[in-house]
Amino acid sequence: MAYGALAGLRPVNGLYASFFPVLAYFFFTTSRHNSFGTFSLAALLFCNPINRITNLYYVPSHSNSSIGMSDDEYNFRLNVAVTLAFSVGILQVIMALLQFGFLVTYLSGPFISGFMCASAFHVVTSQLNSMFGLKLPRAYGPGNIFMKYYYLAKNIKQANIATIVVCATNILILHIFRIFINPPFRKRFKFPIPVELLVVILSTVLSHFIGFSQRWGVQVVGQIPFGRWFFYEIHSNTHTNHREFNFIQQFPQLEGTERTLVVQCTWCSNLPDHQVHLLILGFLHRWCQHLPTSPIS
Image 1 (spheres, rainbow, N blue to C red):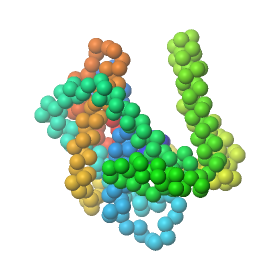
Image 2 (tube, rainbow, N blue to C red; image 1 turned 90 degrees about the vertical axis):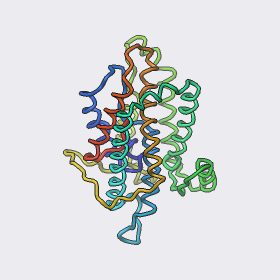
Image 3 (cartoon, one colour; image 1 turned 135 degrees about the vertical axis):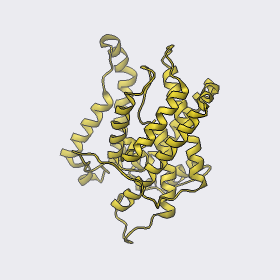
């Protein structure tokens, strides 16, 4: 659900992306050590062109904008998202046919470490609105991360204390389990405590029965549709420009880098074939054109 929100869509799109592409990848994978699914940086990279195109071309059907994302805006954003996924898939197939998968072997360890560290800063910065219960102005271009912290400092007096308490409590619980509880537990039982899932369940139950949203104005996900999924069609009036095409060019190599890094970190000899892996990702992105998913990798 979080990845759907990070991509500028609705949480349900993250649920779709966590099931259908992974199910299809089961039949194509080339390495049992490989990890597949959504991840935060890919969602953020997709969010930037989605927000940019929405701001440029989306015209609300009425002037009074309500809190949250309207159905019309959501449909427009989803149309842009599946268009970008389709474009990325086509480019990945072309790169695989041209044998461009070898490029990931030239990435050094320090480069990967710095890339992951910088990505963590961007992921944390993207969550400032949710962490403090604020609606901060959007910032684009070079130095946008500094502008976001400037907007945060400027509007810190309007922060929701209840939201900060909930966020800090969850972070503290996750940190305690990850550092102090899960390591000895894993040595004894060979598997960690699924603290992330437990925190989500506990927070959801408490929010429902205590009424975080009604009492203290804490933003909640709200109702999530269930019971069916549907095929999605790209509309012909989706707009793209050269900035979005630059993103489409850069994203396939990012995905291949991230997936190869996960496999190599297992210190095993059963590494995937870069060309085949890139081709599989391309076909899956092409297939996801017909599903209302957030980005996959």
